[in-house]
Image (tube, rainbow, N blue to C red; front, side, top):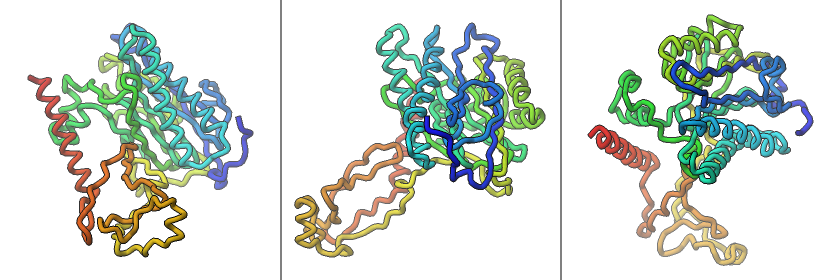
Length: 397
């Protein structure tokens, strides 16, 4: 562990974290497959003792995580426990013990820790055939400076309460969410669908997983709520805001009341909730303008604008440049009209998910490729919607 030093992100003032978490078996399940984690990453204290319930935000940030295990018997319980342990261990070794403290490294470390948890659970299931297919959802939030970074897999949820209004800041990786986005179902219809428990992503079942990485700027007094679907599926978003704000500053009481309402509404699943409030001079006051919601995190590399350049815009490659690149560069005056690259570097575009798109075919001399990113997104969206609808109507049949 590195010594605690003054964090330039906090030079404007102290940020305090008030937090409490609680889990309950519910009214129908025999055992609890949920798990949650709260950790001060600066001190690596991951208990819920008084020093964690109310602590200053250190230079390594604070971690919150809810995991909803699945797989029957003890498999789900094992999966959610592995997920919380691996995420904390990975962040300790790859973030807390590193000499790097910039926000992008923190965000990337959270995503990498999530992927490591997926690999560990998948390997465990392969080594224990009786638990094959085990998995867990994961909603992981890391607070650094005045920004919250979230990694989402599955349908546990994160909410933000600002000025008494709650907004969901994660997006479910579920069949219902896809059908809502495709316009086939309304949110109200999705709430009562018999397929509402079908999720499209989880940690463990597959060797790879797609992590939805988002971020949210935090204002003074903002409240974060993380929960499993045993809570979010038994109440509406305004209920969460009403109960939490009515209980402030008693966060333990807020967790208790939220779980009580979920049980009153049937309690068909395990129920887990974390409530955290952020305060202090290091945060700006809410101005009523900044939006709260699902905001995809874009790193510095992804955020750089690109400018279309044709071959005719590039100066001819000199003999010296050609020798320096080992002859791998394509001349800007090539008959194919393909823009020059340097040093043999690939010009295959990379998506946010890290998947490579096919290299476009060379265009005739003097012409440029005109397929825009918007057209590609529309095409992929149509294909994805068609696949989801095919699965939906096939199952219905």
